[in-house]
Image 1 (cartoon, one colour):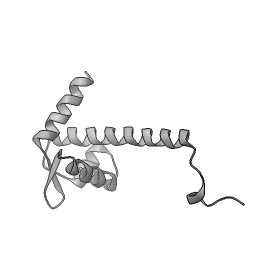
Image 2 (spheres, rainbow, N blue to C red):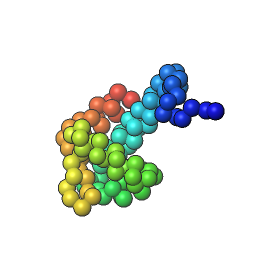
Image 3 (tube, rainbow, N blue to C red):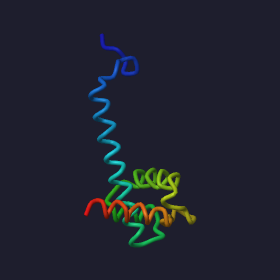
Length: 98
């Protein structure tokens, strides 16, 4: 009989790798959404998801996180605008990847 998932001990190697992959995907999505908003904002979540070719829920969750971090701000009705802090974040990342 197998243990329920909740009670199984995590393999720390696999769990750490999963967190690293997810955090890298998150950073990539953050960077992509902020870059889109630098080019054209304010934009609606649906417009961002179409431009980024990402699921609207992923974009909505990412926008919530970026708002908490101060990189974007909601302007109503699902529209988001980039903040000066968000513009600096994108510029800093683009310079470090050049």
